[in-house]
Image (cartoon, rainbow, N blue to C red; front, side, top):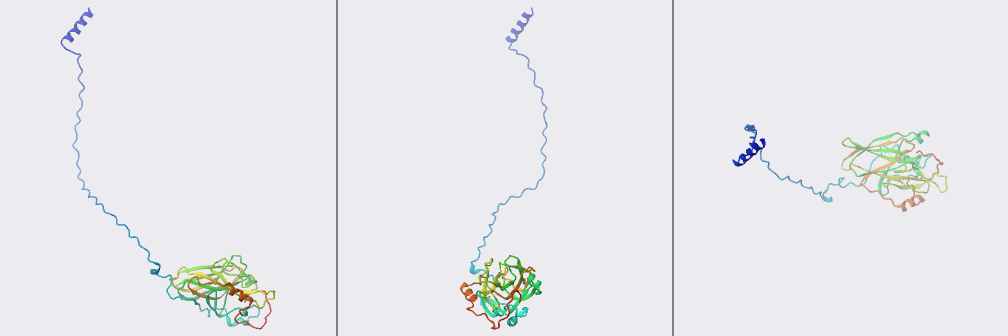
Length: 302
């Protein structure tokens, strides 16, 4: 019975074009749109693109147009050390215990450097002090008052051994109150004033042995020699005036002795080996040599 009723209903739905009732969709909530909040903002300025100027490249002037390191017309000029010498050259011949009578003095040119040898300045050394010869520790305030490229020192040492120890210091005092210091080293810038036949080799290319002669007091065969050296010290500020120079002992074993100083251009020092050999053989008689034969001495002090 139930089957029949169901069949009848199906036929009826099909006949009248009816379909299954559809469930309407759930209503959606309508979201109320809020009007945009307008904020007054200052107008942004237009960005103006400008071309960055390229820095101008400075072309260095030609060498001829550049200011010279040192004022023109600065020939070599010896410093006047007359008032600073501890022993003047006029007293060299009066020294009996050491061969200072064999040492050149007055106006000389050694190693292409003009010198005015008017005496000697000696600075403290330990070995001389042990023997009772105590030299001053410094010679300060040597007047200069000039500009120059290089300073040339005509010097040597007492009791040097070439061990690389400091012997003395040279201080440049500039007119503006500043200063620079250079160190003089045993075996690099100078050697002992006493020596044998062999010429010593200095490590500094700007230091040379410029004079050597026979030691008239030597008892050796062949006789010993005495010798002196020149060291060129470059001025790091050649355009500035140097007011004074100080010489200061390094207070080591060796004493320092200097006979002359000359200012002038750089690279002035030049040594001709043949002239050195002639002087060593006695072909050039040392200035001021006396015929008197003083007693021999092995000590190294004036």
